[in-house]
Image (tube, rainbow, N blue to C red; front, side, top):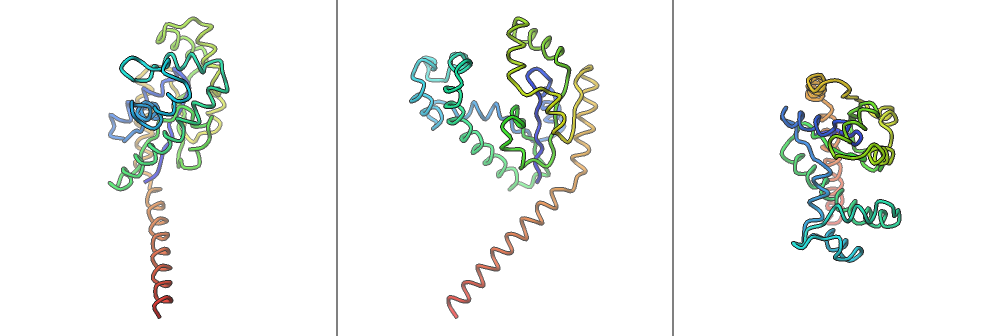
Length: 229
């Protein structure tokens, strides 16, 4: 099995591409969904957030109030770093478990929907292919203002807080151009899916793992023979 990293920018259309890939039969692990799972009431992440940020960032039913927490960390880099130090290890751990489960059932490849793939850089070495969903900055602005009812200024602040899409496009192996209509994006995504499905990269990965496993088993047998000779 090989991994495909899917990323983009806020309101660039990444979620649309992820939805199309799911419809085509791909397994897509959404980092945002995982991020919500690791802070559910009673989880280690939930407990650590409560310890560091107090009860004010939680709803009466015990669930995390993301809007309040976002307000706390938005203009405070130190608190943002604390939150990241709590949630990121839990997110990576949960993603690793999901990847392992899919490997064990023999998946050809899986897609990891990672908004901060190139910003954090931690997951990049594990990706065989990386995909950026691209559009113009003006399109991002208009889509974000419409979707979230933001003012232009508020939308610009959020877009500028991320790595520019043109920079991400320089780092990826595939680009989905989402500057036109949904149908055009759909056709590009189908073409990408066909390319990934034809790839035989997963056989190289499996052979490498088999060789490693064989080496470990061989060394173990050799050591056992030496000990009991």
